[in-house]
Length: 256
Image 1: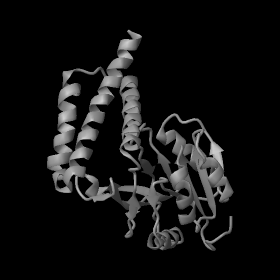
Image 2: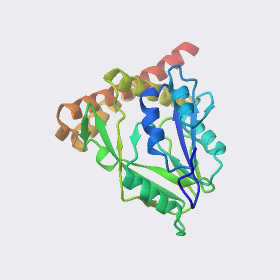
Image 3: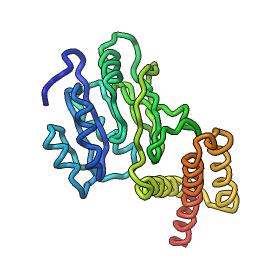
Image 4: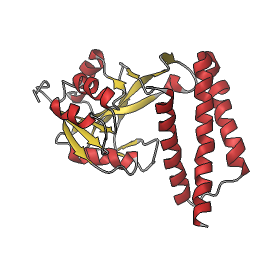
């Protein structure tokens, strides 16, 4: 891959599974990186062939949880500075310039948050909790590591963290079934985590927790202002909470 960054070298990482619709765009948006690696979980579509044809390195690794998969990717990176975007996130030219500038900065900062504009069913979702959405996407691997959360993994940084000025667009929605499948996976992983902590579900979990999630997202976080898309999001996310505890209950029932 042609080297575009003449100063601090940057490795771009991503985890993938059946992302053939996003791989080409993702790699093209990271032409500034010195190394691009995809950690793939045995994709059954054309994700791997597309990535390799564009010069990216693909490493197969069995998926256990998001943190483990991301930390595995970090261990394979040659360079200290990492950009770790999701394949459904769009990196603009303005964001690219800022990333290169910050990686080359001599300031004592080890990680940077990036604000994310969330799009659902073709609409920019401005409320429901997404108005404050941000994630660390640029960091120095010598000071950062993903923690053990199975689903909502976060980076633990041993140093100063700052926020980039430019944001990215997050297109998590391909179709309703695809988005629902993602939530099903998250529910399953969360249930597994709760089971390992020996949490036993009861009426509180089945009724109050889903209701609270809906009320929090739709009313308290103003999802109602996003129209029908805001209602749909609040509903399916609250239902995913219900499924989390249903799957947990099924785990105990299977064993006992």
